[in-house]
Image (cartoon, rainbow, N blue to C red; front, side, top):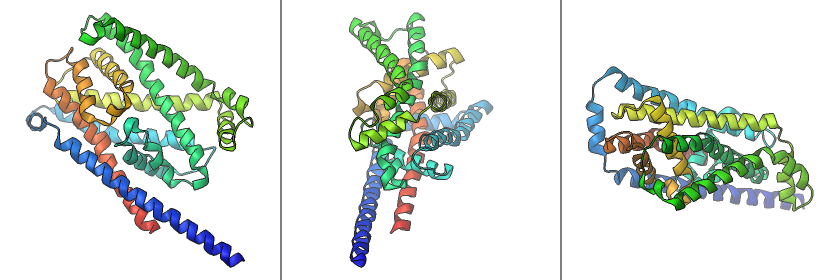
Length: 332
């Protein structure tokens, strides 16, 4: 009887491992296809070559700083993920980094990066994966709040400065922006009320929801502030990288212009219909739409956006594909 149960468990475990291997293989192939498609359809390579021929010490120093900030960018995200998981499963910072990169690989080809959680939870104990998915959602909320806390003031400063973007003159769009402001306020309130929500609904719903509410109940305000601060810091690092990349490409913006333009552009990108968020070309068009009011160098703006996408997303995604393949071989 015991042997039969053991064989059944081993068979079930083997099926789980096989399924995860197949998932990893599919994820890797799809991610590579998306990267190849995005890079092959980009039409600004001529301007990139011209940029590389440009002289000037700070011109190259700015690119060097962008590269130096890549590890900091993903280090902050790894620390945040490790902190989010502390009440569910203790993992090392190294495994948190691995989890973040594999999540990036699964999310890059999915609408609004909703597939990111699937890659992140692969490293975790199967019994903890549902709770971890809920924590990933909490982490995503903090990044949205970070973008909005800087983006909304920047947008109003952008409008007050007299910069003209045709669609902003449309009254319907202004109603849309007002609705976004209300949604953001509601989002912030919900975020900081998560412990109260967890306390109110724990034990009053299904087993899975009850466990999720118990998890929310364990959050403290200090914990929520720390998670939000990590998201804010990572977002500022990402925006600083883009400013440096613009300088490298020949777009010279003052600190005020950079903050106003980049924060405004990321606000628009965050609230675009989700299907567009995986398209590097669409992101580039948003940057062009906003930053062209500061610079008459559209090719350089598009090149900067694409270069940053390559160093901050494409290269880490390829590393994530490698890690997924390595893990599959170790398990297999």
